[in-house]
Length: 308
Image 1 (cartoon, one colour):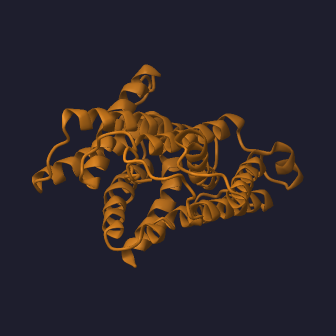
Image 2 (cartoon, rainbow, N blue to C red):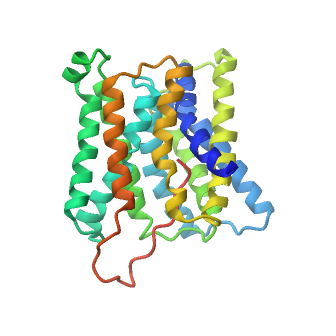
């Protein structure tokens, strides 16, 4: 119960912590600080426990996934949260299973389009349309979502779905924890390089960062990445993947609630309707039994990626 509570509520609350941090720290710098620190701590801890270090080929695979997950997905998420409420950002990223389903149907050919699945995909797309609709926002009395931030979040969700497809083809460490640690470490380094390319270090004075932003960073590193990931790994060895995967339904609800009560974010009819549509879509997609062609020996099971 404690492990489930952690992945439900801690991961759900990390979206507000991100929003708190990016108000003072450039987004790519802030993301780099989170994932490099969490990655190096996890990597060193596992090596001390005797877990083998990734091979050169496994580092290349982890780095490729890090581009999709951390530079694109998380980089865009941290950037978008300067413009979009944390609750809305969480709901938009909850569409990852929608884009993963599209990927399996169109590119991987490991899933067949059924009426049930098609309706679920349409409902999910409809939920995103409701969230970003300017006219609907004005009619329902809510502030419109920033278009650039909304596009960034959609691209972030697509990037994660691409990473999920890539894991079927890439060689990664046998240890799920080491795989995640290597991805976070590589991602943290790449985020720092990307931040430097975009000039985020210019004009950034670390001594000007407030205590609140430092607390948000510490919360993301310790609670969100290290404790949260440890709870997740423990659960996937003791509970069914279907049960563990329910965090995808709960996190957006937690994020919207936390943003409303602690972040002063508005929750109106548009947000509630869009959230409901996205969650219905995700529940249907993730509980639909896959209808796929005969298994190929070249297709490997989907391994876990780095923590959400």
